[in-house]
Image (tube, rainbow, N blue to C red):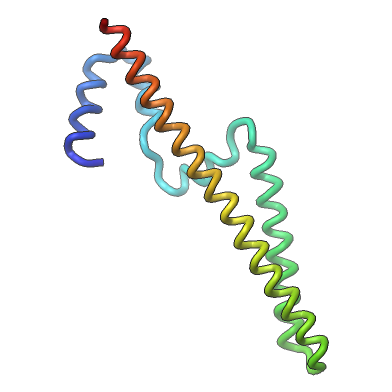
Length: 126
């Protein structure tokens, strides 16, 4: 947050009641752990939990097939296990991308709520 944004936030805090200021603070920026744990709150928490379980399953499958590939001597089996490992890595990348998109969506929604809140304050002043 740069200096001008901090000054605007301070001005907003001065104009708000205690309850409004607490709500405004909740809409502030979050760090990475807060964003990650924020995935498991709200309407889509069940979906994010399911995706995490699926990701762990895909990781276990990928790790097992990769280790089996390293221990196999037969070339055809090695190629088959290598294909499974590559598909597992790709699936994990796609699942992680989905999760990061959810984090980005939540950050955008939080900023939209901040803007709506600021607009409602400006309307209230008029």
